Image (cartoon, rainbow, N blue to C red; front, side):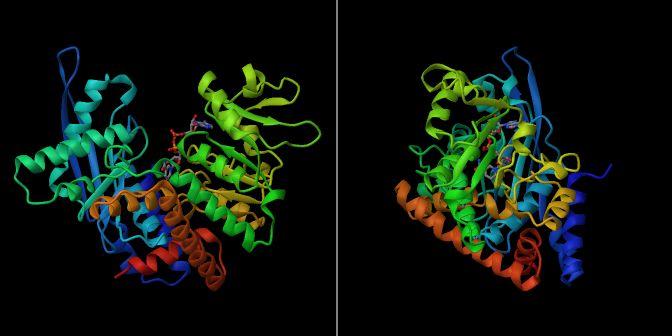
Length: 425
Ligand code: NAD
């Protein structure tokens, strides 16, 4: 069976051949500069010590320090971490950030650990990769199943070790080694909203280029977590009609003769009370028994909306359901939600798909602003952060849109070629 890293390399080589890029240079670029494998012993509450396996793939640092999240998941593999680090190199180049690409991972199901065990694992991982990271070398961040709290443990460990070693680096620079920290703890106001906000900046640019009006566009968002929730909220704030949202337990829409825009703050309030969005129009103060309609996640993807925003998982639009997709625009807010096959099929049908390395780059852009804030020993306000993200994302969209016109191709190939041109030596 081919692994995800081999698949990723194959798809990039195919694109580079099509656009006559230097094959040797591309092949050289594809391999990570270094993949560190680490063992992290953690004393469990039953008194036994369990050794967890972790990785850090530093892919490419031509444009700046390596940058990428750390994932805690039972299905983490070395190949997955390598593939994700390669995508980070491309993403940072697309957003024109002074960063290279990296990714980290630990094979663990964090839900089985107590808080103390999770803290020990996080601190242990930071210790294990200490020698290869730093504000000017490699800057980790949260990813799947890691969060600001985990980042605060890791950065605290990093600062502690640096002090023990009497490293002559100012403390604010040491804090710049990790991003995605809690706002009150050297983090950035607006980092949580950054990815969803950046996605809406891209959507607004796209709609304008296509000569459409935001008010007439019906949007369905799959996933109501960090990315999907803020995407839905900012889209609604900008006049889009967000008519369906979902989480892992199901989806909702409100339909009588035609779809109605959902009240996103109300849905969020309901989700907090109830633990899911499904049925949210049928409980408590936000209940509207006559109109709310629960849907499955599969049905949400096939709704007759204008814009589909997969913001949860990879590969949700694939060979099986691609013929049933009715939206004319897809914004890939999750990483890899549209399979290669479905991307080709839908693009040929005229669907415009904004690829993940452009659409969700608002997240790493937020991380860049946090890093810059720490290095400059400043504290940005949320409005300043969002303004900076808006400028960077508008420019990134403009570059990729023009590249697509020059190359006479779709946005995914244009993004990949645009990034490779910056990264090849
Ligand atoms: P999250 O854990 O905060 O939210 C995920 C959401 O997806 C939750 O609402 C969950 O209920 C929902 N979900 C899970 N399984 C589902 C299913 N089968 N059908 C529908 N919904 C389902 O995660 P997140 O941070 O919002 O990340 C979502 C995606 O965006 C991931 O692919 C992630 O890699 C990508 N991403 C996140 C960021 C970021 O800054 N958080 C940046 C770039 C890319």
